[in-house]
Amino acid sequence: MASASPQDTFFAIPSVPSFEYWILLHFEYTTQPFTATPKASVGQQVLRNLKVYMPHYEKGLKTVFQELIDQIDFAINNARRALEESERTGSDNPSTYVHELVCCLRDLKK
Image (cartoon, rainbow, N blue to C red; front, side):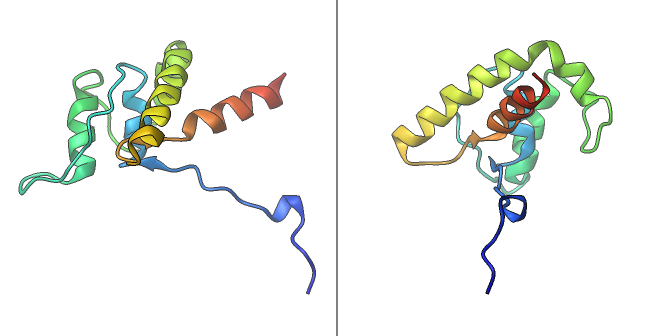
């Protein structure tokens, strides 16, 4: 059996509870855990918080990256802080690794 080559290696980039947590970090730092309620899922809870800043946001919004580019460094710092807090508490809710992908892509561009 052949061993896997680097191009065959994939890494997950989790964002808990959803990708929208990463987007929320462009506006505020929060480590408030998100939990489902009888009326709203965990994802809907994050979306509700995000819509305070981006009322027009919907999944698949094609302009989201252009809209947030000026806040990317703020989001990266918030994500790093949130990940440190997540590791300290032992809970991944909330946490994200999307900033690591963004930083990797930035480095490739250089």
